[in-house]
Image (cartoon, rainbow, N blue to C red; front, side, top):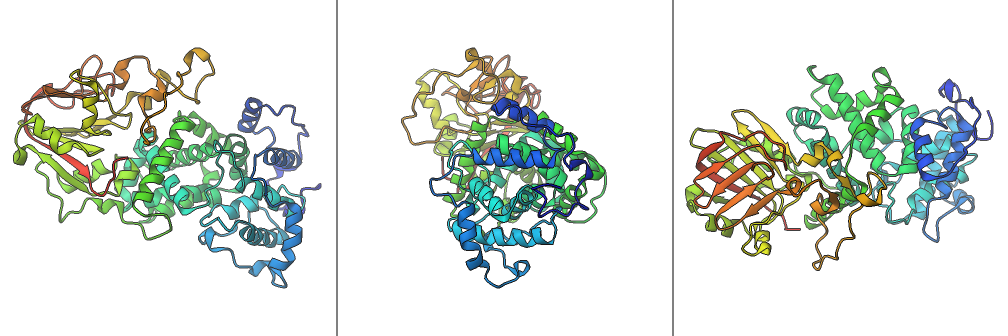
Length: 550
């Protein structure tokens, strides 16, 4: 079967991948490779895929001293010694991940453990890397010998291009990627997210499995197709495919009772048996149909999540606090919503704040109906949650990303601020959430690096930020917006507060916090949140305890 067959049990290998359609790679231009990878150009030819993998990995920019095949040959005997390779213990940093056998023969299964042990000796800075066994196992199918596989995996791990990121190697990076995935589910798979909230005690624990779906549960034919694209396009592909898996899981399971009372196990079983319902082509088609944020936005979100974890001191694996219990029944008291409704709202907020407990900052029943008092109690807090109950018992509100003190930058002029994480909602009579219009309709804006190379669409260079703040995730200045109305998130003066703008306002509240108006607006593309003109019975503002303003 050729030079790349040493570690393969061909009886297990898909017969369609055995060197048919002999082709050569005609172009190495990024756009061409991207197209070919998505089309599965080298998926049907085993030796061509092996050569392409070797070429793509050898082009990864790496640290100056990156262990290579010669290093492996020098150290393997010393590290393995006389022990049977099949009994070699795996390093702690794989977090009990098993080595998937895929289509490996007995020699290949032993080789994977040897390679992982040698990698552990050469990368003392790796502290958490559950994806490693799957990557090693897959690449062994496309390697001439153990040393070549070792070198290729080392190059992936040692990539030093700041714009590229392949595999998480610390718990901080891994956990923040799980939070980022949760945020993406919340934005792009709202029906699936709603199901997860309904059937799981801890949603973030379900989403923390997302890498396991890809690196471990996904059958080899599927994982190899994902890996084809991953090597060309990078980490963002993993988010896309995991979102597509969740969408398919929801489609298959909606309306059915769960097979177990553990949704984590149900998703794992679905991914393992995915061939029963979805082909590799359909999976990738669904993944690339999702109009995700640009790579830059996802990096900003990942950095914000990492920062939040560091502020909480969560940098090594520890027992996770149950997110569902961030809103505690015994100490949560609101005159507008009960615990269940507050937990529903909590499931919508960004993951980096979901571990925080709600903290009542302002309520008209205690602090009075005064806009100046509203500002004095809210300033210094971001984000906040605004809840309104009308005199006709309707309930609506808004999640606001930015400190109200930002309004002062406009002087006496009413000016809008905030980010695309803001959203508005109604709870009574029925539940409906309205997010920034750009999230559901990205075609309305051109985002930094994601769409189009037309120079007329490019953003002007950003002026350096004088503070040390990160440019916030979903900042309007990262997007070429069709009009100002697309980014009218929040505004305030001594006369009123406004949330959402353009052809109307999602919420307008007067200086006495007594009367309000609501209508459709362009920023959130919302329906009126309650009666179009309403009187406020009570208004509450909630902050996020233990949250540092970022």
